[in-house]
Image (cartoon, rainbow, N blue to C red; front, side):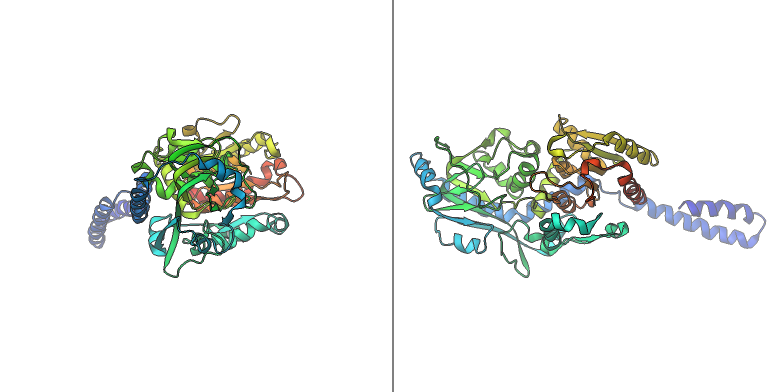
Amino acid sequence: MRSLAITFVGTYQSAMNNQGAKIALVILIILCVVQLRNHGQQPPRESSLGNLNNHLNCFEKLGGPLVQELQAVRSKLIGGASVNKSLDIYWRMDAWKHRSVLASEKGYFEKLSEFQNILTIFLNASLDLVKGCSIRDYYQHTVITNFRFLLPVAKRHLYQGKTMYGMTYERNLSKALEKSSLSEAALDVGMPTGFVQGEHSKTLAYLHVIPNGCVTQDGDVITPEFNIIPLRCYPHRKTYIEKKRWRTVKEVFSIGQYFGGGMFHGNVEDVTRLSFYLQFLQKNPDIFIQVSQGVPVFAELLPLDKSRYISGPVCASVVYMPGGTDCCLPNFISTQITSFYLRRSLPDPAHDKQTIVLIKRSMRRNRYFIHHDKILLMLQEEAAKYDFRVWVFRDDPAPPLLETAAMFNRAVMVVAPHGAGETNLLFSQPEVVLIEALCLDIEDFKVNLVYRNIAHVIGGRYYGYYDPKKHCKHTSPEDLRSVVAYYLLQVIRE
């Protein structure tokens, strides 16, 4: 439009002395008017808040049959259900003498079908329908420095990234900017080991309804006949059974899992188990929600009353047990839905996304930047080129939840040493860039790529910095400057 205006001025000046130019001038004026009219008729760009509501409405409609079936099952069960307070001690004493069925082992659903008093409800949908509800664009190509040196210390996570999330690893930064669609393999994340998806209909979620059961602190369900171990961290590690009497309620919805008291595990592996069932739980406020060790902080932003959450082991007339979450492998769709709900409670950041977040970790577990102040200065220098700002997120003490959420919601880039603060990416917008210094864990000497998974699930981009010759805490500003500059330039171009 601006080029047409410039041409118009020059043509007008020359047309005053040239008859042919006058004709050209008339044509040019018509073109200008047409373009102005078309420009005025273009629909306004949809805000990010509008997109969130579209995503959530789509998923709520998709999950409608699941909620209806679950509601019908509840109506049949709850009428005559009563809490048997005398059996919980017997169950706990002999719990591990019973047969255990593990979601981490093959044949999970087939084994459970042998028990007539357990009902499993599935949510199925076509891949096209799922794509229509979920984030449109993903970045399957990730860049990690010294990739070949990472193979021996992160083999499990590298394999899972490729086979379960459809990600590849590249050396070229420009390759990491290529967009892709939802990987069909990603829908397998969160399903029991060996589960085979249908060719046309895909299973997105499943839930067990179990009469007269007890739930351990780690989310395992025990009954007089069998135990169910969901996908979780260390599924073969038996839960400690307390000797004291357990709390008894009429109905409980279990989301607690092993490590559930941690920032990452509690919010990404536990809270996301609620995603498909929020409507059901809102309709039935008498159902308690069992968590592992205290209410995960992100749950405060979900549309459920905080008083409904109960910690630790519990027995109930009816136990609702959604599919679990494998250790450090966030379920693709349920994590997205949770992120949509969390971000919907925040102001629309569409016109205020000129922010870089630098995470300043405490010195716990040796994962922090010794050169934090110098890295901050480097980021400020690069940000100043585009009139961006840099915010520092400190985890000890962490800011109030809404302040944290707003900070990450406005971020176009997050720079951090590996750590739980990156869990706040669930508040971030698609296309956010995560630049992470990868660390060898002091306990198992492995590198965990879970935040690469998180970035991918929410439609973000990922760059991992790994140097086998030094620990991540020694990362310097110059190790990251060129990458920061490159991605900031791409953000401006977009």
